[in-house]
Length: 278
Image 1 (cartoon, rainbow, N blue to C red):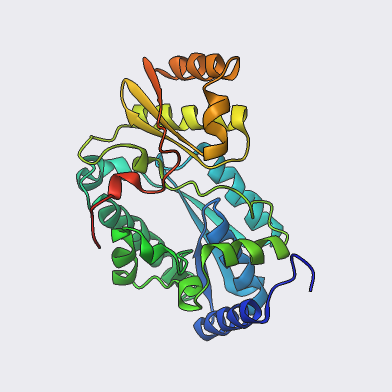
Image 2 (cartoon, rainbow, N blue to C red; image 1 turned 45 degrees about the horizontal axis):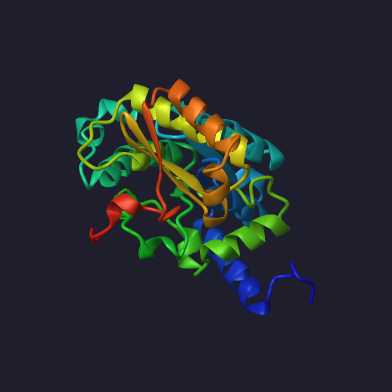
C-alpha cells in the first residue's frame, strides 16, 4: 500500500458516506472554502451526479476574503450550480453582541435561509461539512443545524478531520491541506461586540501572517489594541527573530494594532471556549 492509498476502513467510511448521500436523493451543500465542505461537495457529485447537487455559499463578513474565491473554484471544479448569497451576520443583535452562544444564533439564521433555498430547489436537503471530530469542541451551532434540518453526512459516516483531508487529497481538491480557518468571530473574546471594522482588521492581520509564515496554523486573537499571536510551535522562535519580527510588528501596526504579543502556548483551536460545555 502506498503512503497515500486509503485504508480499507477509510474506504468503508467513504462507501457509507456515499450511501447516506444517495439516500437523500438531491442535496444542497453549504459550501465554504474549507476542506470539509469542499470534500462533501466532491462526494455528493460522486454519489449523486452533478445534476442532483447544488452549492450554496453565504458571503459573510465573518469569513476570510479568500474563502469566497475558494468556494467558487471548488464548485467550478465539479461543474455544479453555485449560488453566492450575501448574508450580514452582524445585523442580528444576538450575534453581534458576541455571547457565548453566538454560534447557535448565527447558524440558526444562516442555515435557516440556506434550508429554505434548498427546499425551493426541487426539495434538496441541506447538508454541511461537520465532521466526526467537531463534537469534541464547543459547537453550539451544531444544535442549530439539527434544528433547521441540516444533515452532517461526514459526521454520520464517522469521518474525522484527518480522514477528510486524506480523501480530499485523493479527490484532487486544491485546498486539501488548507489550515482550519473557522469564522473570524472566534478571534474575539466573548462579550466583545463584533464590528465589520474589527473583523476586517483581524482578517487582514492573519492574511499578512500567512504571507510571511506560509501555509501554517495560526490565529490572531484580537484584544484591541493588542494582537495576541498564536503560532505553530515551529514558528514561535523564528517569529521572535529579526528580520521577521520587525516585519510582523510593522505589518500588524499597519492593520491598526498598537501592541503585538506572541503567545508562548502557541496555536490552540477554540481557546476562548475553554471551560464551556455544549
